[in-house]
Amino acid sequence: ETGVTQSPTHLIKTRGQQVTLRCSSQSGHNTVSWYQQALGQGPQFIFQYYREEENGRGNFPPRFSGLQFPNYSSELNVNALELDDSALYLCASSPGLGSKVYTEAFFGQGTRLTVV
Amino acid sequence: DQQVKQNSPSLSVQEGRISILNCDYTNSMFDYFLWYKKYPAEGPTFLISISSIKDKNEDGRFTVFLNKSAKHLSLHIVPSQPGDSAVYFCAASVLDRDDKIIFGKGTRLHILP
Image (tube, rainbow over all chains, first blue to last red; front, side, top):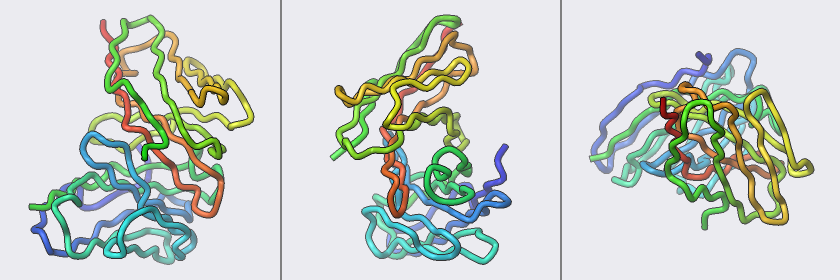
């Protein structure tokens, strides 16, 4: 079991609403990456936060935004929800950048978001 | 444009035999290739990686082979065990500003008794 916890585990929202998803990072980890996994697809990179700053962004519109706090936990906010935003949202924490993002990262169990 | 492709959605292998999961990629700039394992209701777990400058990496029952000329990699699991039943994601990354990981769609491995 990893120390990365995501909340809530499941969520149902209506189209047009806003949602905030939360991720606690593993102790000692200062980097958090967020991914969206649609049904039948692999996870897709949304963005990464390193020491409270956005460090990179995938091909997602600006209505996807995030924050990282001083304790390195993180939030993903999605505004103006669309039906296609229905997916499993995963966060991963790692103890730094570079190859540690792959080899020493722990993923949370994900938040299943359903937009109706 | 899918940069990492796993063309087999599922694979069934007898317990004790070898499981071979395949992956193709299109971006010759990838620095690292990775395999993740995912059980239902859990996040992906890092399994094994290989740098683009190597052609083989072994860790216990798991071996990853990289063929750069063919832009192909494979994961071998020997011997296959019931606990290996899971979804396996092939992934790759370029070591740059955000180190984002690009995942394939996954292959569901069933280990048969």
